[in-house]
Amino acid sequence: MGLVGETVDSIKSIKIRQLLTQAVTLGMIVTSALIIWKALMCVTGTESPVVVVLSGSMEPGFKRGDILFLTMTKDPIRTGEIVVFNVDGRDIPIVHRAIKVHERENTGHVDVLTKGDNNDVDDIGLYADGQFWLHRHHIMGRAVGFLPYVGWVTIIMSEKPIIKYILIGALGLLVITSKD
Amino acid sequence: MHSFGYRANALLTFSVTALAFICAIASFSDKFSNQNPSAEIQILNINRLKKQSYGNDEVSLTLDISADLQSLFTWNTKQVFAFVAAEYETPMNSLNQVSLWDAIIPDKEHAKFRIQTSNKYRFIDQGHNLRGKEFNLTLHWHVMPKTGKMFADKIVMPGYSLPDAYK
Image (cartoon, rainbow over all chains, first blue to last red; front, top):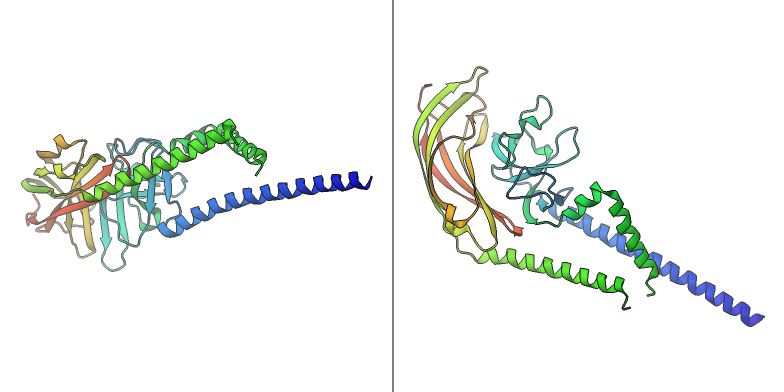
């Protein structure tokens, strides 16, 4: 009787230890991903160091589904730079090129007009009502590098959330069933 | 240890890492290209210099732009975005940059060109400072790679000026 009790106890304890180890491992994976993301934000100086191109307004340079790497430095904004900006009241960031820059003498205040390479008209129609220029605080970053096609994963996951759940479910299953 | 899941996972991880490595090397190889682009811009005609109804000056001009950007193309180049901007200073603004014309150059054959065109985008000042104004014309280019780091540079051509009176 004592032997059976001991065996049952040891089995139970192994299970708990294993479960805890797996939970800690999962937590480590998630937090290290978060650490990398936050470190990227610090290094590049912008809140979104990586964005996915959602529209075709910069074709043929950037197609839908491409990934852009952004940085934001204190350097002044100049024409030709590809900037990412948020319009007041909308949360989707837009990636277009600056075509006009007017910088004030002493304050460093700057008026910027942007246009998508593939668009026929500049972005005045996209700005808020009564707004004719972008200012520095609208601009979240400058594009410095790019990877093609990789962003399709994000687009598919946001347009068909089912795929997101399937992926997370499969990953979770893999972690749970792994024996080490 | 040899289940389908493990094998798929290992394959995926390895291929993504290898792809990322190859992309980084492709981008790095762009550093070794020797680049010497050249350009020349002439103003053929100042068509109009007028004051708009609510006060800002506007210029319309015709440009003759010739450039040889062939040396910018490497095997990792998808396209080169070239544009001409006018740069000048006014009492209110320490720098004004107005893009007058741009073009997308998709390959090396198209990179040596000469065109005559009126300004594609309106040259409008913030204010009325354009009479007799001296300005630089700059040809900028932005090399967009097939993968990796983008880089941009420019040629500044000083010494252009606008007429002293509205016309």
